[in-house]
Image 1 (cartoon, rainbow, N blue to C red):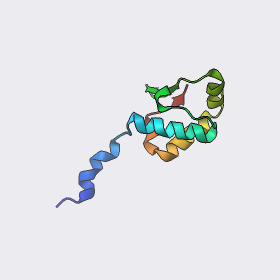
Image 2: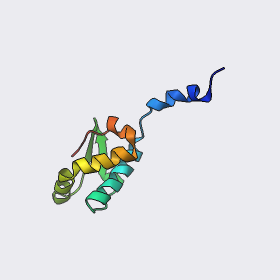
Image 3: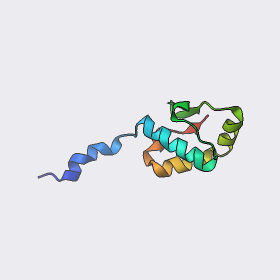
Image 4: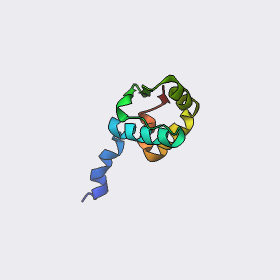
Length: 87
């Protein structure tokens, strides 16, 4: 007889949806940069999160990129497979 954990093990490899990643990025940017941005301004493509904001905000995000990514990785551990950089 199989245990319930054996049936559920196939779900361990699922990656989070992009909407959850965008939400985590928005909260991390708010925490480290202090600027509230909309989820609609974030596009994830080929393991890179592209953020459409003014250049001054983008510069601050670029300086604090490691802190932002660390916060996102702590909130969603599977995000390491989905986001490698912020631009």
